[in-house]
Length: 362
Image (tube, rainbow, N blue to C red):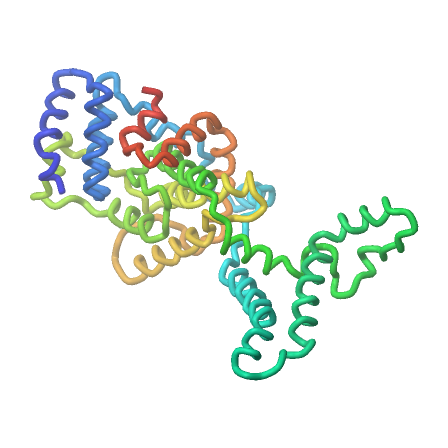
């Protein structure tokens, strides 16, 4: 992968040694080529060299690391903060989709009962399908729109008074009985490109501002685990990467520590925190990726002799801490910048260099 960038990297090294600044256009083109390599080491080397350039065109890369609250080793201090952090959103999309499909299947069967019965030479299917379909619709309407119905009844003269919500059977009227179905229905039929791009922009901005050379727009546990493990591995003596960096320096900070793992967790949680702040249900972000990432790290560390300082037994605390940090960062981020990022992603025409240019204000 370094072969594709051999000449540009040599030129960048020479420009750094001669204190020559890189133009924004050249930086954008270099980032586009580096991104096409899909290699963490390549991307990290490029970002390191650009960061060391005179009048660096990527001044915001890694700048939010200083804003993070350090994960303490002191248990009372740690628990004191964890008792006041926002709760990590839950996600049960498998159950929600299953519930929606089940109800829709029953409704479809009831709707098609008469035509199918006549198609196969019988009479109509009788009143049962219509009763079941009526019951499904009635429960859905009462559970989700009871306040509207009761308010309307109060406006109509001589309309019968509707019972109090708390007196309805099965807890109807609160939206709880049909909540799984409604959530699953939203997952199946909601298509919101703007919302999806906002979640992707939040993930990109988090990775960039924390100095993580992983600009996947949809962060996942596998990529986070690969980055963490690769960061702990020393380059081989024949690694072309060592030709572009000063002696005894590294292009990728070790991430197998509490601080490093928390940065990766923040990247995974960034779209979750953003979407959760705007919407009651998560559709385009998945909080389960964080736990999956820690499981991968735990399995890898238990089956190898890789050195690390991760308190892997404190996985729940690490996730709570990271989500609180992700929530804090997204609230502090410039909303206009994130909106510009999401619009660039939605257009489908923006390259990696273009997106970085939006962050840096080129």
